[in-house]
Amino acid sequence: MRPLFAIVLTCALCFGALKKKSLSVTGALAAAFVGLSTATNDNLLFTSVLITFFVTSSFWTRHQAQEKVKIDPTFTKVAQRDWRQVLCNGGIGSIISILYQYYFDGQQPGELDSSERMLMTFCIWAYIGFYSCCAADTWASEIGTLSSDWPVLITTLRPVPPGTNGGVSKLGLLSSFAGGAAVGLAADIALWVQYFGAFRSGALPKIPYIMLGSLLGLVGSLVDSLLGATVQATFLVNRRAVSDLTAAEQRQHGTKRISGIDILSNNMVNLVSSACTTAIAVGFLMFLV
Image (cartoon, rainbow, N blue to C red):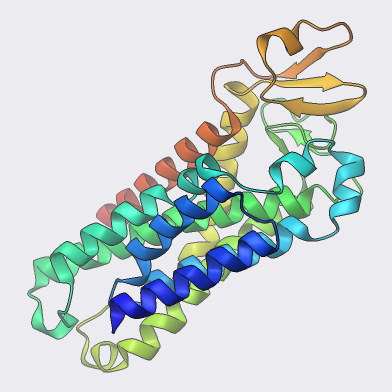
């Protein structure tokens, strides 16, 4: 039944995203891999977190689209996610889900010894850390862009045009906190519904993942902003902040660098920041135990 459920759910999400033009064809194919590798997991947390990230990210990406186009001319380009964006925002999560299935598929927490339960917890923390960062980045980018105040560059605290990589605002930071909290809340609900008996018996630790997700979301957003301000170049073109320009476009008359060095693309910044947040989540758990 799980493979059938995974196929039906993945097809529904992918075809729905294609219909709404949230994903390109290649993006839908990559999303199918992410969906199948996650929805086949017998721990509902993994599917619940992925759906929460996917649905909320798609909603906020389309929210007030016309206003975003006025602020950021590249919005129409990035609103439809391709395979690179999908894998940068889901590839590591899929790997964690596959590893979890390899070690714990079909097993209940009460059947595991203490070291196995600890490894299970590490997988869960890593997964929440990854998607908290991804959700926080998307929420901060899509909601923070609508802020009435200009953001400030995280490295200098000077005002920069909306859309500048590394720019942070109060609304953006609050949004990243809320995005991480949404991921944590989805994890909490799924775990308590599926493993209520394990929590009552003490087989699983009673961790408020909504708090963990919100903190990791904020940390991940700050890491993403720091990378964006330093190793990702942002340029001012026609009074608007743009990034990921070709070498020829960077040399065009009137193009001015605002911040950063042209080392990483936006997709690579997302991948590195989410990987760092995953490592931070694991490292935090190791410190606690």
